[in-house]
Length: 232
Image 1 (cartoon, rainbow, N blue to C red):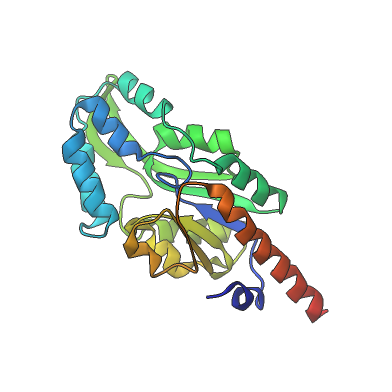
Image 2: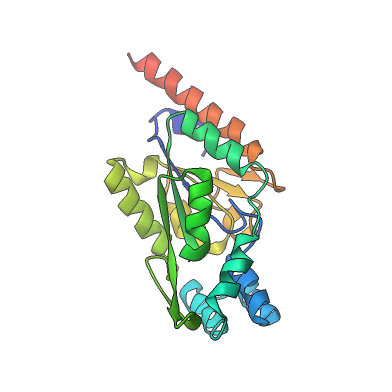
């Protein structure tokens, strides 16, 4: 889909972001695995899941089980060191200035997502919860984003709350667990993405600078306004 095609119908002021390797330059679960001393095993599962070789829900539970026994304090120390992706602040600031509502849907965990959401001023932050008992990770995970189609369901939920149609929304992500999200949304941006996601994208942006997304959104915004003015 081209920008001009999209602008003919207009679009809602809602932009939905992935977090890991999109808004942050890291994979949360890989950082936790390093802290737990199981990085090689977890990173291999992560790679296969993001490339679409493993079912996302199964891969998530496999990886989280390997974190059992990690002290919560060490987990928090690990995720607090994760950097924002270059340009993340500028992109979110720009789209909010254009009047967008923003949502971050992360298959990662609240121990990192809530901090990133606060830093960026996200309107919605949706992520999973790691099991903790007596200050130790139990190896269990629960939450709204534990299956391969969870992001699609959460897009529908946020769109309903914002009273917009999901096929009018803009989404940005990088991995196989974003496929169902991309299939449902109206405009799809693959950022620094795995090959498996690119076939579903309207725009593909390589490298690691989210500022490159800003002209894309501004073009969509301008085309939409021109289309609306022409209809008057």
